Amino acid sequence: MYEVTIHQHHPFNLDPRVKIALMLVISLIALTGAVSGPGVFVRLILLCIPVILCVLIGQVKIGLLFGLLIGIAWYGEAFTYLPQHQILTLLIFIPSGIVTRFVPPLLMGYYILKSTQVEVLIRGLETLKIPNQVMIPIAVMFRFFPTIREEAAHIKDAMKMRGITVAHAWHHPIVYLEYRVVPLLNSVIKIGNELTIASMTRGLNLKHPRTSLIRIRFTLIDICFLVLTLVLFILYYLI
Image 1 (cartoon, rainbow, N blue to C red):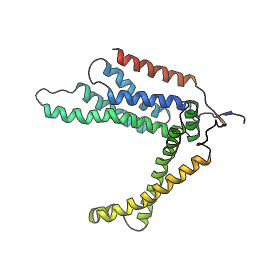
Image 2: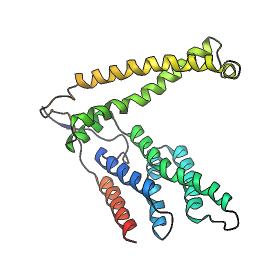
Image 3: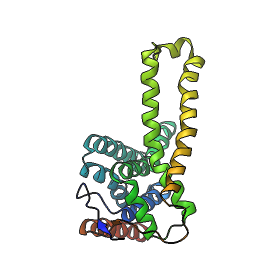
Image 4: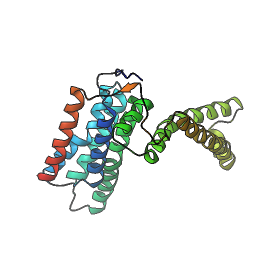
């Protein structure tokens, strides 16, 4: 079978292998990063990479909003210390630490979901020799969350048509929760099974190498982001 190159919809839509590498590095730095010393500035640059990527693909509001949140939390975690008010310091330090450790990886995941086609992601995982036991769940989950979000919106619209609004949650919270959760759980089970069957129908569970119409390759932008991230990663642990 002939292979064809799939052109990116946006020049800053990085190679899926680069996205995976950035996700691993950013998650590691975010979760285990120190909050003192010169390394905090390198950590800030790494934490802002998802913000930059979101802005570059057109998600400006999301990128700037979370960038401001990460910046404030980073400053509160690294430089806020009130010797006379230790409780106030903890009230600033703990929420700031939660934001700097979990928001950047989540934002990077948002960027990957918004900018990556499932077929391209699967092809990238195949080139990395990822086993099917890992690749199939990732492919299913990649389509799972957007589909569930759409299904939840449909359930909400159906409830509005029947006159069931958020105001009912104050008077009948258990009934309102049942109306929202039970149909969603049924949809989750059904959609999960359908996506798994669809993945296997496309041959993701085959043992021998699959042919593909998609050919991915590194571009100059991919190399620049990858080298910059690795340099900052090494620099962070050296200084």
